[in-house]
Image (cartoon, rainbow, N blue to C red):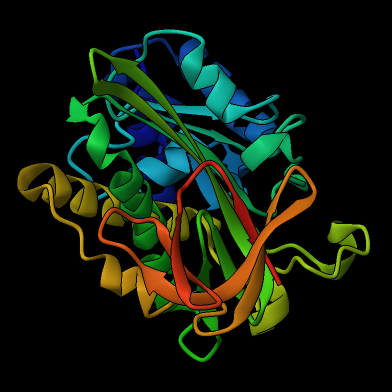
Length: 316
């Protein structure tokens, strides 16, 4: 059996003959040749000569062979499922009983969704479209804070890549860059006896998208557009998974998350906004911050209203 990750690693280091590779992996030379052809189909540029095989360049794809060597996590992503195209990474994870920490990644989604069924545009090979499955039991009380843990983890990671840009959190589940939407989250939970037994965290981030990818939507942007350079999606994904795992472990251990970290980075903090539900304005007030449970504090005239995740959206 050929370990594909190790196989690629070796061929990146130097040229190996078919005979050497066959001995290393305990397979036939025919099996080696088949694996070489499969790598070519995936987009690897491989120098093939009578002396052997050597990888010259790798595809810009989030395949296992490219991402796994970058992972520093303890369990998130070690069951890593890659799709060239899929309807929805969230729906796939909900379709069966996968191991804790499973990550499903796709180059594009045909039916990717955000909150309230809104479509998420996912041009092929330009963004990060992935979902994480987590199974630790947690009281329902902590769900809203757990959502902020995931949001904050991605925000912290992206901040390292956008230090000179204006990165903000749009409550309850978006990240904005220079006042345009960069990333969105969709969190599905399974609850039994007042406990969350399974969480599927769907994440969509615009990385190397070009302006024309957004079909004239002036509310969306990408890292490439705002920072004027192309980003390594593989490294960014590995960094995000690491930060998510670190924050998730800490939250499970302490049941504490400092919502003030999110509050000070809120989009439109201190500004007047409208709360909209099903296309109808419900409230209008000033964003005062976040409550300890993760709800939005809105000052409506002289009264304080608490707005809860999953019920309302915020629009200027």
